[in-house]
Length: 191
Image (cartoon, rainbow, N blue to C red; front, side, top):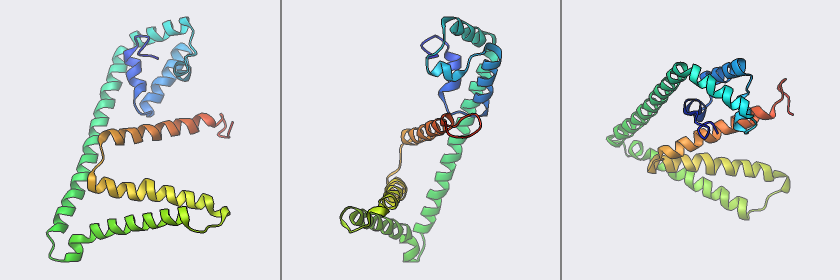
């Protein structure tokens, strides 16, 4: 909505993950203009409020630019940390592959095979095995964990995962957090 109205600086601030700086800017906007940024996202602003928001952006250009630059730097540092972590895991695997002990060289493969076999055995049991209807929720939870975490992590380890997939997961987590926050009332209870 902000980008459509020509407020690229503000749009860039609220496009990424919500962090302390983003919340501070949202509070500053509300303090200076009386506009809640949630109303912006929901398209509830009047023409006068859009004008006030544009004036806020023009008056605070340097602060918004500094925030965006800092945000991009933090994102770059986070990406570097993730890449370094992956490099350490790869180096460990390379060292294990040089070992004279056959079990050490193949442990990761045995472990992946065990996880995969157990996951498919549980899927088979969940689909065709006898189970008590009162245990359906437990079976669903275990099945979700095995497929969504265990098997997925195994596949990602051996075949990799794209950065886009990681970004999508981050966005899903952020939106889930925002949704749970929106459902809570001012005193922390459910609305």
